Image 1: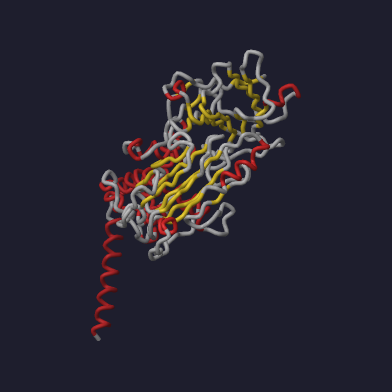
Image 2: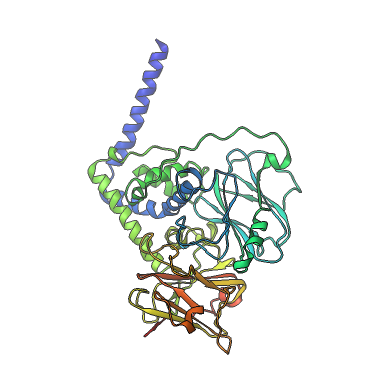
Length: 472
């Protein structure tokens, strides 16, 4: 009898809590609900895009983008091409090495070999898409080393003198993105040899000690792209918020406000529990949030010669609570590097301010010798469509399988004075120009310059790329 009463009491408590949450949401003024939803969507957009990428690559084994489970490093054995739809504005310069860290049970170790003949980098991004750590040529040097990553609530002892560097992570899951420079088409075997020497192990494996108890399963929700266009975005946020506790102090006030529309770490969300007026208000707020992010993405930074001189990627301190900048950065190119690591000028319009379109126009970009991108390591210019969301997109299928032109592209023809002209068009140009042809789609497109290891003139703004010119 007592057990029955306890079960009944627990049921009443559950119903009471659910009713209280629903009542709170339904009692919201419509304008307040819309305002909160817009703000929450902008705050959470990087988490949503990160969820999409991580779910496809690490959780959903039926996904074409699936690579492996957590704490297992995988490698691209060739550069990215038009078949890759993992993330927008994907780099095709350097074959990727990727792994997702699950830090809930114990810290994870990345071990790298000495790499002295080329540039490489491992970039580490948390669930907010903050770049919180770097390992590589610029940041840690070309020597071999072991690097430790520690989750937010780990209480165990960290052995001294074992690691070149220890990084503390503010989310329980994180992404490690490795890039290894490819020095031309005949160099791929060398890249693969280097990739095979990258190692990811748990701390207990690294030390040869007993493994701790495995962490519980994460309650993943199968990702549906349509869900992130309305109030259903909340259910994905709630999964991720449960993995970023304890909350950073600068987010606490915002997250308390977001609870008014059902955003709460680990909580279930069912939009059918909302009344029609509140649901419409939240959906309207989401649409306003999407519009605001797109507008910011289109004008994400200072423009020079039509190029957005992008510097939108960094750690938490870099953003200074500018959630709109963080969201727009993800829309333009999720998992972009800090400017000091790689600089990403991007262009959507030609010299006359008109949208770049390979169906209606041909273009060229001419670099004088002094205008060639100032890179310590190397540079590239990559072509993308806008098929992802009307702003960002993917590499373009083309008849010569050329997705970019970079400083190591074989056969480029330079001017007598050391300058370089790149021809950007849908149809193959005259034979004399073909060596410098960057194929464009028969639709709108954008170009992204990447400068790996930007020199001072790129960092301080005294250098900018020349404008894209129409060719009659």
